[in-house]
Amino acid sequence: MGRLEHGPGFGYRFHYLRAAAVEGFQAFLSFPDLSHEYRSERLFPLFSQRIMSWRRPDFAEYLRQLHLDAHATPWEQLARSEGRRTGDTVQMFPVPSVEADGSSTCFFLVHGIRYVTGGPLPVLAPGDRLELRREPGNVRNLAARLVCTSDGAPLGYVPDLLLDHLDAMLGTGPVSLTVEHVNGPEAPPHLRLLVRLAGSTPPGYVPMSGGRWRRWGS
Image 1 (spheres, rainbow, N blue to C red):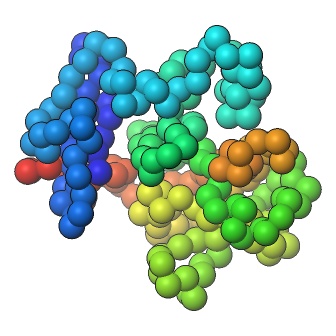
Image 2: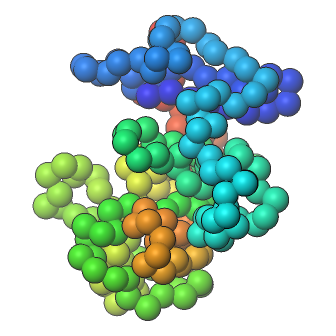
């Protein structure tokens, strides 16, 4: 629904996307004007409250679950954790990076694990190869892609927001999907499995641009 950016010279900025033009969508209370670009030197409260305080005794364990080092910035924590917070449906997702040669590598948390596996994950280790599989019977999303073990056992789903990028990569050539980090049952279900996706994109391709990704009113 919106894009949050961070960089030198402008601090933080947020604006709505064309995707916000859906029936029933209500602007965030802190960003009431759909056509305005909001700027701040500090991270907006809507997002800063989605970062765990370093003062909490479980902060180090939280970073471990996210597969981040002790010096990870709040921005890196948001990008990895998807900014989830109990009690709302806000979800954040980083724009995948693409190198000058068209190669792209990104990390994502596998979605829907508790619904797909119905129990604990099979034994997985960093570097294990994974497979992608379509799910034609998925009435909620016909484009859904299952993440499976090398022997075909389903684990969960590729995040919906990454599907267009994945299709761009698959249209260019084969992709590599491997286990990056696995957490035990003590971690929340959405943090159980972090994977690495790598491949190539078409010439001139820009991820998450055009169509619904354009700025509101453009």
